[in-house]
Amino acid sequence: MAVAPHISGTISTHSTDQELINAFNLGEARAFSIIVERHRPRLLPVARRYAKNEHDAQDILQEALFKAACNLQGFRNEATLSTWLNRLVMNSGYDHIKHRRRIAHLSLDDAKLNTDSNPALGHDPISQLDRVIMLRQIMGRLPAAQRRAILLIDVAGLTVERAAREMGVRPGTIKSRRARGREALHKQLTREQ
Image (cartoon, rainbow, N blue to C red; front, side):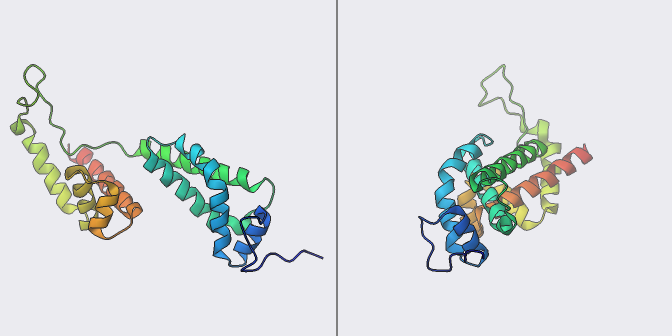
């Protein structure tokens, strides 16, 4: 006879991982919060190995925890929960690195400075005029949300969080809009050159 899993209200921070998994799979959302609290301190350093900054590490960890929540009903106890979560963080880290390599850095101001003179005075705006005009035309073809995300972060210099507040969306939404917009810009610029 199988032992009945914990039901809502009986789980606590002292519950075992398996009890928390069972409770979560029965609809107790708080169980997953306890799992996150318990394992986050060991998972964040793993995420940091794949990130260039703390914000990216948090994104990697968030993505892994989202995958865990979506797939916890399929957890088969072939490994410990901490090992499984660790693997999810590593996979999210690999995906992050792949995505970072795939999206080439695209500067909105590729003008070169004359290093023979004062760099502050060496900028020649006319030399890049054709490129600036082409860039503005391509920017005009982007969806408004992608264009605004690029302008707020890459031109105005706002942080992702501040841009998200300005647009009334979550930071992840801003990041994806910006990434899609930059990718479209890159494709159009390489096609038109």
